[in-house]
Image (tube, rainbow, N blue to C red; front, side, top):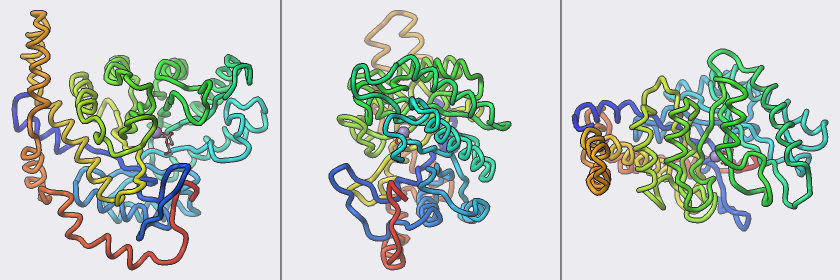
Length: 388
Ligand code: PSV
Ligand code: MN
């Protein structure tokens, strides 16, 4: 796109969903470092998310994780969200933190455990009904650690059965986003290790099942943008869990380690129409901020996604096509690299200023004094983390 005002229109409309757990304490298996002012409950997480939306104007939706964000009264949580100008985004199921799931959840050899897991997934659909959420995000930690531990194809059958039951329960306008992950916590086989497995299950389920691409869930060197192009072409890309990785599933700020990869992904999104709201691609973050301040880290991540998107929008599509059609390898590559090399920060600052926002979201957040306020106010109680 070379029309500057058309590029700005698209950037103004882009929405990025932030994860409730990004505002809570997190860490590695070695240590969780508590931070001052961290939310004690989902209401406070939403209040922090509202700061990100206020600073960027681009993050009105917040993904919840159940049971971490389980509450007695979802209408009260929704009212709180609405009062802050927010909506509830994806409901993330959690079938990975119970002793019963040692050998798997929906693929467990024990039918009792499978029933318990599916019941949790169905409960998540109830929560979608109660919150108006349209997206059920399913990630299964299921898999095996040792050759021979279980029957790989039987596990696929159990998975298909569980997915079919949940799919049947979906209401109008609700869908499944099925997430894959190469390894961890299982180290020999994961039951949904890659996009092909997720795609095959989604295809069998029907139009309300789509694949979610978590950028941290691939083998090093995987060409993620190819996966994105393929899934978009098939109408099966439900969304992204954006985060950044140097090594494995690092869950660092999106675009931090490899902004060029994020650009290449967004180029495929733009090229294949994935920014149009009717395609339903959800641009979610799935990150944890272990050592850095959380709210500004989420703001930075939103800005990184916006910058990658702006660069992708600036690709001269006509020149690219002409070079591709002419088989001019170097010219085609140059068109792409020209867009990537553009400093889009002034363009995004303009978009923000025209929307009545501070052109610098991080400065805007700092000026609110929110960090000091929550550090002073949120004293006592139990800070939220992976288990709460
Ligand atoms: C698993 O690694 C995952 O990416 C899933 O999306 C989980 O819901 C999330 O991380 C938990 O942080
Ligand atoms: Mn994820």
